[in-house]
Image (cartoon, rainbow, N blue to C red; front, side, top):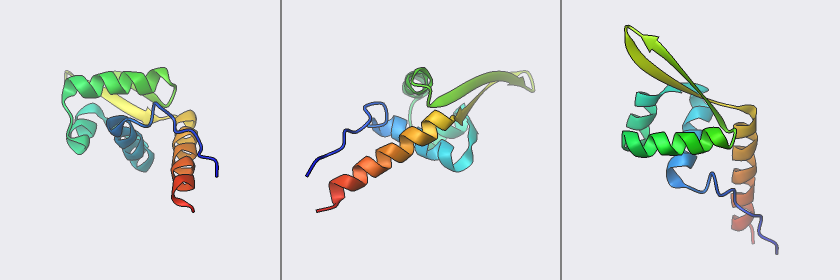
Length: 95
């Protein structure tokens, strides 16, 4: 039996949670992601940048009612990477 390699970018609990969340909602605000993942702003910010550098998410910044707003969305590459990761994990569960 051969085990498929797990994507190191998605193998982090918080990054996997972010990608899973964005797959279900397509786009989300930073504060929403922070609340849903129960992470600190600093840690989330670092992990979002790693996902962005990998091309898995897109980050846009804008203003809403004079407050800065950070929006994150999943990219086609992110969806593809997530699907591959899930398939690789499933291969570990098959005898």
